[in-house]
Image (cartoon, rainbow, N blue to C red; front, side, top):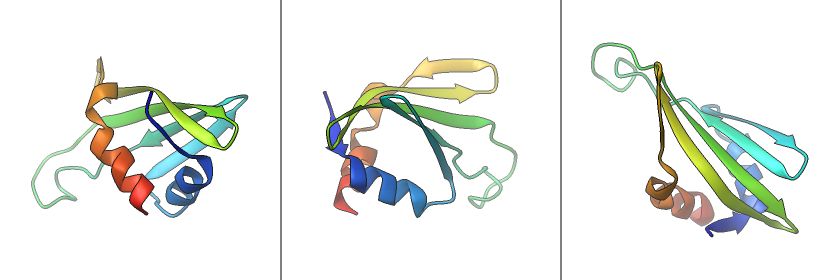
Length: 91
C-alpha cells in the first residue's frame, strides 16, 4: 500500500488548478486533467483524465486506485503513479 500524509496531499491539491477533489466518507477522489497537447506545445486535443482514489486512515491517505480515461477507453494505472506520489510527498 502506498500512502502519503493527508495534510500534504490536500495542501498539494488545493495549490494546483489542474486538480479537483472531493471527500466522500473515508475516501478522497482526485481528478487530474493533464494539459492538452496544444497547451503543452504540440497540436491536437487530449481527452485524458486521471481519477485517483485514496482511502483515509487517521492522518494518512492510502492509494486505492488510479484510472486513466482517454475518450472511451479506461485503464488501471495504479502501479504507474509512484513518481507522482513521491513528487507530492516532497512538496
